[in-house]
Image 1: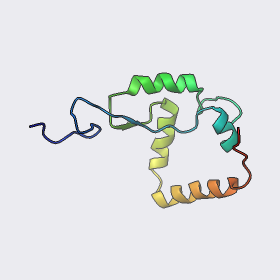
Image 2 (image 1 turned 120 degrees about the horizontal axis):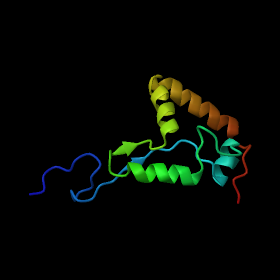
Image 3 (image 1 turned 30 degrees about the vertical axis):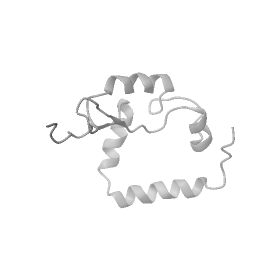
Image 4 (image 1 turned 45 degrees about the horizontal axis):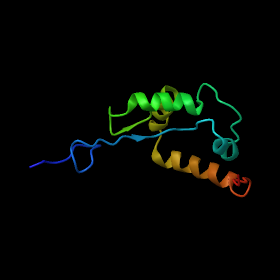
Length: 103
């Protein structure tokens, strides 16, 4: 009998899944959607994010592997969900129709 799977495991106990939750990463898509021109302290290059993500595989079911993203998530978690949802919605609505995402 296999027992109950732990959080983050699939139905077979030997298979572990990790859900990575990134914020912005300086990619071509991010530059079009969020007007991100280049990497910065809070916005890593794809290579730096990938290095951080690989180091966090298998540690927990859900993680924000890039350190500055973790800091941002921590402070965001202190706010009520309704405020975060309103803020996210306002950003999405302000971008609606202004972005050409064709490549």
